[in-house]
Length: 278
Length: 302
Image (cartoon, rainbow over all chains, first blue to last red; front, side):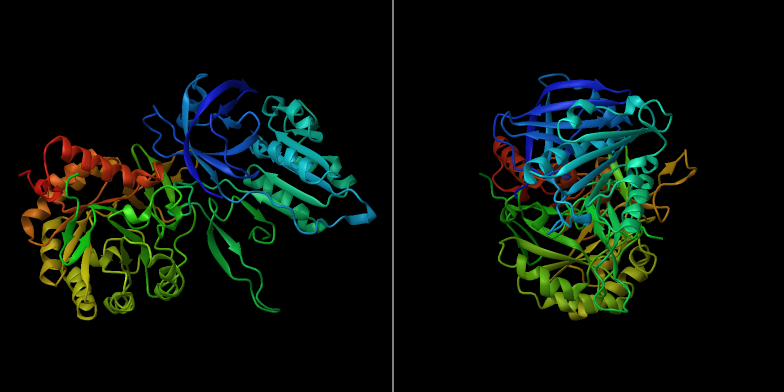
């Protein structure tokens, strides 16, 4: 699948929640095929302190209308500038980048069920790629049962809930208890009460570590989408590395730990690759 | 269409635009964006005798008009390059140049000797200026004796074009340039990154894992231009200029200051197709000024 540099046009931009903007970008030409979990490198013009592109995960793609959605958390000068874009403005993007979510083959269905249960866990702006992943799972696995477990500091962090509800059950947690279960995503009672066949997560590292640790304990296939700081987004500069464990070559030998580029070999990594267990 | 071919010693380039080591991978990462065979020369990622994992994350900090990195020469080693990467590159018609690094003159020499055997690699760039590894790298590039010792050792076993990449983190870059010229270098490239640091005030600590990193991007261009002018007055061998080149205008500035060719580095991260735009921009400028040969502008500024 080829990568390209393309100017996309802002079809709409909307402030959502207390700290996000939702940008719908359009193109006259057909968009390239994009996999959920992949990302776009966005050039930020007109912000003197923003030199590098900003990696933004793909929130949704509608190939019929040639529309790409981005959910951007406003955290610094670069994203503040993105939040000021106007309808009709052009946004220069390099896309699609990275390795997205995948389905383990075959998807093990535990407990004699016929329907694979997939849990998509998102925290903060990490909820963004899960919308497209939820949609894609519905397309790919007609019989899948998709559950979104979305966490934030408060209710204003949990956005696009109507969109998520189109593709699965939506569970929420907030640290201040303003919506859903009070606490972190890992405090949600569904994790203790239900059995999932696959977990895919994206969010702050401590959250993903907790989710991956849960998946290890319950022996569930799990993938996490990392957001290490990156420069090129193409696997050239080697700035965004994560130490991963290669599969154990033979019994009794230590796995080989090496650096991989989150931008190219990730951002989605399997729990077996992550060196987070300690 | 002006003549864009330039020569760096015996090395022939189809145009003066090259890519800076560590910013363009092995070229293949960029082939969706640029036809690699239209780039004058591609200098691949810093290569060492033994594989290196590099420094811990975080390795990068954005700065105003630039960035700091402390990657620390992560690479799979020269043998891996020769066996697994070179076969993918050799049929692409550009000047493939390997950036060679090491921690002793013997290391450098052995690594260079193995690259010498690769038919489609007409030159190496000796990295005696990496600010991010403790055992070697810049240690050789900051003294005349150190620089000389590495260049001499490599010159004895490397028979093609030998480019030496100079560190700006020195008191007098001209003196180092003279030393490497005397030791047998065919050309110098400058500048490597400037050593700097970045601070996280909330965590009250430095951002990068090893504390310091190399600064690159347009913020270093004025320093680089000044050093190209200085080195040009000190040596007779050709100069390859780099440091913050973002467009054809920047490239022309370096060439007018005395660079026979230029390297594009950090700009590849902002625009993966920048190399070809710079080549085209140089050509357009020459045409619009009635200049027939790009070499005619080299060193026209005092």
